[in-house]
Length: 498
Image (cartoon, rainbow, N blue to C red):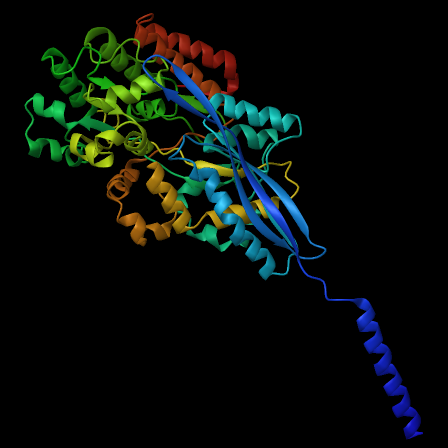
């Protein structure tokens, strides 16, 4: 009996060896070439006679290893970014693909990510409309990087997904500064992940202040005096008027704001004591605060010669060059403008060192006839996931791997935006950057736009009043009446007029 059993075991062993030889070699992973394409990136080159638009396509080749039987998942990310300093918005997602795929491999998930990015510097209105039309047509990108206020439109419309319950699966998001999550919320839920933050400071021209008779000590102490409320918005306007009358700057160049509508104008209203959000969904329009803003702008353009009546001409190139050429005394801008200026406008004059020598920055001064407190506004951009994405978990994984101190700091330094992570407060590459370390304290004065489907209508009506008084077509009182009528007609019960 024992001999029979041994014979059977030997036969079984032989059969197993034959089967192994017939099966061939063990399967090897499939290598797939991942193509990351930046499409439709337009660079505008301006000379004295002609404006040339150059369209560039950049192709980045990466090798992605996909297990046998695995799946290569194609994701598309869309970002608005001014080249070259803001391109980290989408480029950080590209840089995160390897880490995301490694995380999938580590947990035994056979899917792998390939990423296509579409990144250009489209107008914000066109950018927003493009995403909405793409969503309606069923062709939306998986990830859209946009202003947080668009959550107020896109969440109710069903264009983006609620990510509240997904965030806890990714430890990277625990590092995000807590207050920034407020910018991602609508209806008590979170609809995106902060990508960047910024401040909107007052910039001042040191050379012009010296011409006006200011000492170096007075110039260097200006940011501190503004923070303490000792130098107010009204003081700024008085100084600007003095500079115009003394011929230190040309008429209309005492103070400049942005040359078209945008988030900045809301902090004028906040500084004047206005509120925009209460306990309900309806937005608030405070007539007293708005009238203070309209009177101040009317006086600056029509009576004091501080601000040009045609400042709202929409010319960004002239705005940048007017400032960097030293023609203007005070300017309200963004922290990101600093990187824009040393990269694109004064690179041939010493770059960032030139800016430090000739310009300074501080919080927006307190409006004495308003809250009496300095102010700024933070407008975080947010990564949002389209409701049409077939792999929202992979999109969120990719976003998480782009939300790291190294990648976010590289972007912040290049772009002049502020960090979004708690750990950056002690991260040497971030803290050693002179500009970022000095602009970061401005966030103690920050405010936000509302995430509301009614914000666009509110903003357009409020801005109509600004246009009317600056051009001189309406008095502040008449402009206020027009704005109130428009708000009531467009928003009805969704606006509270105070």
